[in-house]
Image 1 (tube, rainbow, N blue to C red):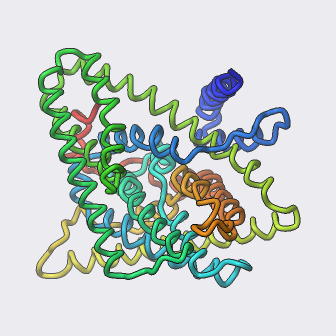
Image 2: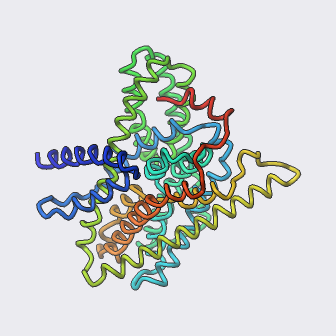
Image 3: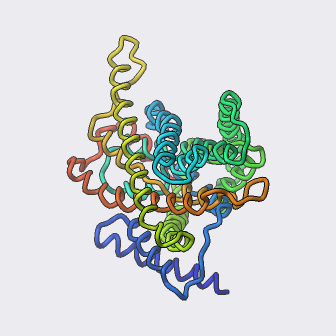
Length: 432
């Protein structure tokens, strides 16, 4: 009963602070994280440990499905080059960069442990990107790139994480085998999502006149899809994302307007509660992991986390502006493989660079680190890796999250760019 009381208490705090954040005009995730940190230091409050399995099964599928459902498919397709670059190559570049910084800077961090930390912090977070950039007036294209990247890059980060942990435990790393497994995991997740999308579309085609049954099926199937994909040892993240994309296109043609409105209202409430709860949990975890670090090491570890945050930001900026130049070159060539709409200007490149917040997935996989190795010895530097990971998540969410609105205003980005052909076709139909 005590656990239920805590959950109700956190939900009430989350709802109240979300209203306050709207009044004082700051991103509500930032206020919720600060509140979570304060709540975590309450002596009478029991330790609230984040269970990675709960995050991946209960939180991730509906959040990914909703984001994929509502993303502009045409914008996604037009900007697939940039999205793929950020979601795959940048993830691995960031993993290597953070691994190098951690290895040379932090005592006791070997190369394998550095790669574990790099993989944990390599991917941006879909929940954070969508929640913090919402309502800032950034362009439709920029928003789609950020959402598309953070939807896909979780799969890349999780695969990098598995290989890194395997290296720590003594497994032999073979590049061609790792590359083949990466392709199999991604393509398997895509295929699973497409098949489950077909199955759900077939069901909805026969029950869509019953609004309650239709919405119930759309709520349950993302969980089923994620579980099926994970049981097949392919990417559950990719499977749920492609399920959302497939059902979004299907629903526009079939669903009557009243059903779209019912579904939209239902999902808005569910996603609001899940998002808010996640950000409070992120804040609460900091005091908990801080207890496992000696007081003499707190400030040095916070310093290491800050440096790693800067390294990740610099790498991201370099890769985004390199992508901007590559797109311009491709567009200027005679073959014209890139459309003009896919080009990036310097303002949008800067916003994309600054929007690389880490979030719940990084936190979950950090806390999910094995406690022991295969031989029963403790996992080396586990507490240090978890603490630094949580600190980096907080630095990105609070630092970049608080300054992003200021940056958008400074760049005078106050109206979405003119993408009438894309937005009109999508916005009129993109409801759940």
